[in-house]
Image (spheres, rainbow, N blue to C red):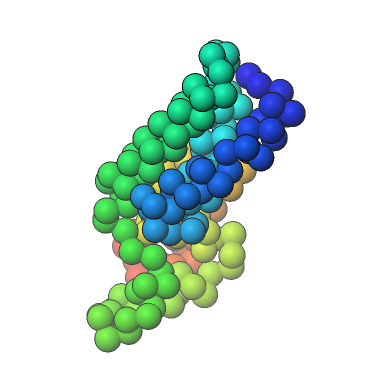
Length: 160
């Protein structure tokens, strides 16, 4: 594992390159920032020394491109739509879907986050725990409570 100074120096040297590559592949600022963090986390955890600065830069470029490709081909990314996109097209929403989206948006933030990440982005509870910095059991509890609130808001008996 690299020390903080090495990582900070690498970020200063290669941040622009990594961000440009990400934007080129992803065309999305939020995804670019996610991959940026992933790349430099991998750099920090990479223990093998680099032969020279050129080798280090090539490694970072390869890791960046691979991370972008992995994100673009992920199963859940190809089958999800952001809530913003859904709400921008109200005519495209069936009345019952609009009701569900509005019910999700009416939840307290802590429940909205886990519901969104689980059902709209397709993350599992352990992944959500890592993303939000919460214990996995806490995520399961939040999901359960959020689903119960959605059931009550939508007047349903079935699984939310």
